Image 1 (cartoon, rainbow, N blue to C red):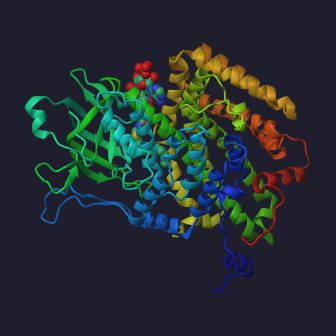
Image 2: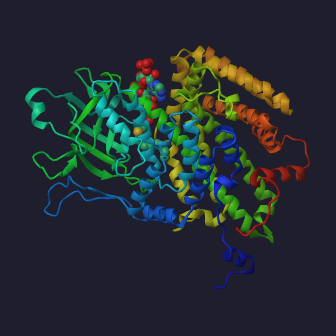
Image 3: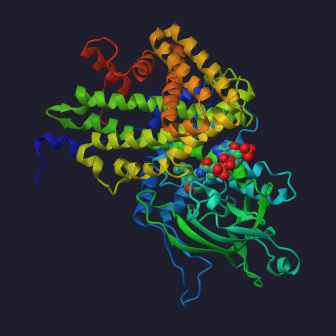
Length: 613
Ligand code: UCC
């Protein structure tokens, strides 16, 4: 059948997504805030190239391949024995994307800038942002790899420091022949969010028992002295080279953390034959999204590993990883959402309805503008936390070549306190906002948005499916609410609340400069009420209302960040976005036509120039 006249043009010039580095005004704002000005040429070129590369036919064909050819198990050899050598099969696309992530420094970048010339976490996560929508979730192993590198970095002076140093060197390498990825195995059948139900046990081997099973891992390092047995119920990145896992130790069953390589040399063989290090993959999980990612149930029988830190301090140890993977979760949320909005904008530029392009249809643009305000707010939140992470790791917060030096506290204690309290809140709120936002993006494409297109470029349904995990793994929203209250009440609430209080006061004071007095008064009132409750109420009551506090803190911190960002250059669109976030959409008192003009500026960065995309 011939396309009707209203769809003919659309079929002939379908939407093409422009590289986000050039077109996403929220991302550009983040770049100008968190990277040095002028932006170093090497970073400029890298981001500009990478933003094109992630939309190239080559990369998108890997994504399509990874979605089409899902991982599977071959548990038995030809002759029916247990297949210990290569039981997991992943797609070519998945493996190619893993290699791209490694070469591009998706993990490595966070550790590379030893001269401290820029906040490497900001750079890393801006690049990560571009990568999310094209990565088919190889970002999940990257997250755990980054977390493991950070944790091992804290143990380099331990007795087994040489083993950790070698593993860490591999985790942050950009050379695919050297590089390792890591898993993070916590979840069990009886111990999901609450790891006290862990059934896996570890026992330190001594004497003959140890000698008999001693051996070497895949790169010739000695296997650790602990023997680990149990069952991990939800383990992503089954194809990793190493893992950090929790197990109970001692008569009292305290939770401890372990480092273990995934592969070991087969005993008695001199031909370099490898086998899994006491791991049997029971089955792969069938999930709503993240389908290319091999998530498995794992039986552990005689896995050999090293105890990390002290016995009984496993949760504390692994919380280093959790906080990093939560950071990755945050960027994955805004990254996927940003890609969805880029698709919505591209679609609105070419799709006609009732004789008008969608980008000229005020009601359509208004809805998009509402979504873009939420996206801008959460972009600021996400990258503020990323910048805090970089500063907590040694970046100089008072480097004046970076505009965000005016919004980040310079006192290391305040940085630490803000990072601790904002990480769980931001993880929770960016995940929920991204899921809702991607649902709205799907709707903005009508039926096309609901399709599982073979071509991943326009497949918002895929992004939506994948985003749903972000509110679940690495701790559900309720767990984040719990962690928020734990951070406020445990570390001495006066520390955290006074750090937040002085930061909010500084933000609120900048509003007058750009005529946002009412808006800042609103923020101040919200903080006064919130801080009074957090101080006065007991832990149990705060936990009961935890989700309300996540939401209030989200509104407050995003509002402060939008005001401070707008105040640095009095950009009129940035001011309008701050106003809308704080007071709502219908509060300006302007005519609807004036509001509609603002909608367009917020979405398309000004009047839409109709280009053939
Ligand atoms: O699903 C998983 C892998 C998926 C792949 C991930 C990729 C994501 C990237 C996305 C990119 C695409 S891994 C499993 C996910 N599971 C979780 O996230 C666990 C959720 N549950 C929690 O987070 C809980 O809050 C627990 C397990 C941490 C709570 O355990 P406990 O035993 O109740 O903990 P305690 O007793 O409250 O805390 C023990 C110590 C305390 O320190 P001390 O002893 O000095 O007071 C806490 O302050 O640990 C400290 N602690 C922390 N410190 C606990 N949580 C934290 C934290 N977040 N930061 C710092």
